[in-house]
Image 1: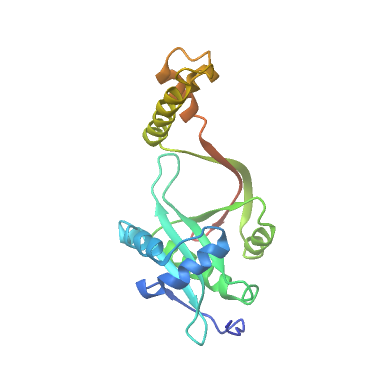
Image 2 (image 1 turned 135 degrees about the vertical axis):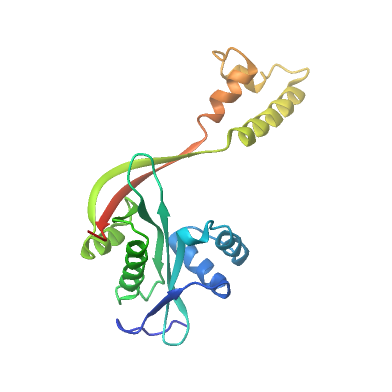
Length: 214
């Protein structure tokens, strides 16, 4: 049952391991289905702990209705900065102040760690989220595409297994093995690497930032 929330009713605190089940449920609403065990494993792997914080918004009835993860990033191309890695508020509880309170705590945490700016990325299709960040003073400074390669070793092993199956299946038949689908590949390894290099997903992202300290 959803808890009624007024703008001043959400209390923001650091997440505890006992919040994992509710954080997992909210992660699904954000578009990242997760189990309680997934969340516990990820929370425990945030190292060093001093450079990460997970905040939750808690309703007056004690229900976790939102969470946000902020971290400090040390970069070569820029000075140290904070990154808002994720922020979600439960459906039915949005536009009531919980997200704003989580964001304020993330900005305060970033200032306390010497960060001048807080950056975030948001999928280009999340128009409501973009409007929220802009209302909080964030500036949209670019759009970009993101890609994440499947790890080469895993991809190669999978394709090598597929080639073995293919060669076995075509014995005594006219069907060509998988490598013949890419005749320009100079070798089997070349073919595998060519396929592995194409195993990516892409997403359009909008980038926002705000100055949190002078």
